[in-house]
Amino acid sequence: MKITLFQSLIPNFSRQLTSSVWRLSLMGIILSIFLIFLYGCQGTVEKNDGVIHLSLWQSINPPTNRDVFNKLVDKFNQTHTDIQVESIFIGQPQLPKILTAVVGNAPPDILSFDPQLTGQFMELGAIRPLEKWLDKSPLKSEISPNLWEELKLDGHLWSIPLYTSNLGIFYRPKLFQAAGITQIPKTWEELREVAKKLTIDSNGDNRPEQYGMLLPLGKEEWTVFSWFPFLLSAGGEVVTNNRPNLTNAGAIAALQFWQDLLKDGSATLSSPERGYEEDAFIAGRVAMQITGPWTYIIKSNVDFNVFPIPTNMKPATVTATGNMYLMKTTPAREQAALKFLEYVLSEEFQTEWSIGTGFLPVNLKAIQSEAYQQFINQKPLLKVFVEQIPLAGARPIIAGYNRLSDSLGRAIEATLLGESAEKALKISQERLELIWDDK
Image (cartoon, rainbow, N blue to C red; front, side, top):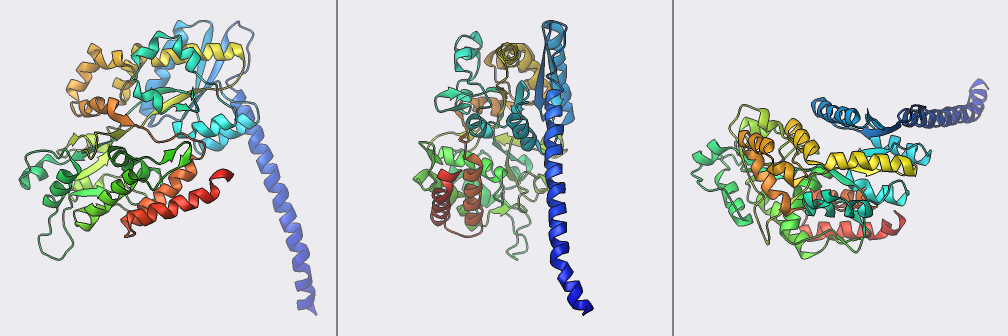
């Protein structure tokens, strides 16, 4: 009887517990929204001092780069007595905070974020198009033209570039010399041959002590990002008319090339979702790694250099661009925010920002400036990335990019684990077609 009574109490207790948990969860959500609303408002409260106070949300890391940015914001504030910009660092998770602020009608005035979220922000009506403003600005001709392409969608320009960078291949010169390699590879076939020569299995156990190249294993964005230069070099694409297109010849060829490096035994895979780590390169277990000028390799004590992504049909790399959005607020605030965006694009800002952080300038005059030329003469490997700026393509910024990237990452991962490139891309394409119109 006691057992029966206890059992009869379980459903009631469960319902009460579920109800209590639901109430607590709801209260938590409401409290989170309220706190984020206050957080979003903290930089936008009007003060009766005749000055427009703007909030700028950013997630710039590492802290040393954030310090450079904040010093430049302070410089703007010192020269604009009628506008004061408050730079606010938003920690993880960033996107929920931003979306909650937008939905709660408490957005920042300016947002520094990821251009691949442009489509989502556009669909929410959270951002202002900038092409009419830019067409009137003399700064338009000072910006590398191909950088605008990553920021355009449906015929409108939705943000400005804060900085740019791109991918190359870092290599160990001493390992090249030991393998008798005197020229860097310029084509895919040359890269394949060099990778074979750099792969060393001294004891013949089919477990090389040194591999020619590291490839990133995983389905997250780093894998997709690292593969994109090869896609672009093969003339491939992943979006046609704002819809997924993963099964074109260029995409198949680029993915097949990565698989060929593995079949040759001259490439090794990173740990899952860790393709950006440089431990194997620094330890000499791999001789080449795909990465950019932000890499820790530069701060290490090992010998290193860098060469451009080798070519298939055409030279190509992919941009790593940070951008800034003009959020929808009020006409007066938006006009004030545009003055700050002009400052960000200027030669002055871009020169100081790039020297302080190692990012590449988006302003052509900044690149040509005496100060920046002196800087890259001290860091000559940056010249490779600067010279690649006009060749750099971009990942799509459509609203469904997250789903596209996830499916593409799964196809790359499956191919690196043994599936045929064509079949893996076909499966991902079919998956996307089922869900695309529901995104």
